[in-house]
Image 1 (tube, rainbow over the protein chains, first blue to last red):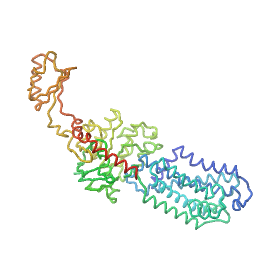
Image 2: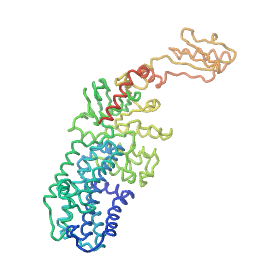
Image 3: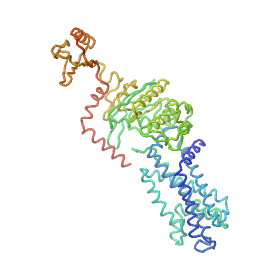
Image 4: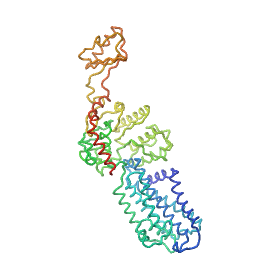
Length: 245
Length: 326
């Protein structure tokens, strides 16, 4: 198990493009948002938070979404297309060990991403999270659920070429209706988005940062349910062979 | 001891049957070559043995295990290595790391450095995979196939695209593996490779086994008439040749007057011929005695299937349809 995690890490950290894009993008996002919307005053528009008190957690959340859901779906479909997964399937490595290795990798990347975003946020005067005890489990659960959904999406696509398209097709609208880039004040939309995976994670992250927050059990429950759905999809549909029967 | 036993193996893609009940066995410790034209079903048959595809009928036993059974799969992967046609290795790991990673998947792996040595990548152990040449990557692939110390190794067209010297090196590696007790099942389109490596062969065509045997006996070529060829000495005609007319079918080509005679007893025929030439003080240029080559025997065996496009076309189309649908 540690063996697999170690080599999964090596494969990632040696790849300059993967490292650059995984970590640069969230930092860029939060820096730009700080430059555009920065300001200390609390606003009703941000539910009584300052702009960066709102955006730091949501951008931390989307960095986890990208590192787990998007990256994993693309990596898995690429590795399947090149025959890497087929070859792996021919070794005695149990499938679950392989996937736990990937999950551990994604969680680690997510932690680094979140810390980077927090770091930039603090430059804009955002206080550190008020509830570390809530942040860590929220982060791990979110990462795991998004990984499961990423593996689920990888099970649906046929080719590596179509993976990024499907990933974006799902992610793009979700991010917008979930208040990641701007708060949403429409009740109907919030109710719907609240049942989808991204908004509950945003809310749970915001709660972990806010003084009045903590654990949001209902949101974490919805997130976990999506994780289970993704897992079931992956378990029933996942293919190792680039050329299925 | 039998390493692989296949009995009445059938496989359908959709409604189209691509393997119509094939039988063959591979003995432990031999190099077995599975031959056949493209689309004959070689890859499908191998993938069933490797556990990648399910069979629709027949019995298959690999090292005493059933590759179609989920409970046998883990043990089978422990004991079987495979080298596929496409190279698929992490570009940013070094050769040694790549081998060490896979070695960690097996109960009793081979020594990583010894495997690198075996395939001639000893000097490249610290090189990143992305910096290797195409041939070196293929050798790394072979190393990954054997790092788990398999009892049985599948090689799918192992030397396609190799230069002649790399092929001879690869053949030696395969022979060394056989000599250390590994059973090897390979597919190839090169008959010189079969001649150089295989202890036994089976020929598939259109989903049926058309022949099995050894490279020396394939297509009955051991019993076939030998051919004596030479350049007709200047100033002689084919009528003067001492080879008995009923045994010889001679063709003199206009350009170089090369003569070929097919004989059933080459020793006596050659003796008569050379005595005749020596007596006349003539030199028989480019004198050769040969049996039909393996390639000729193979082409004869598979020709009837190549020449019936009506049989081949539906299968090819059927397969494509299945692939794009799923």
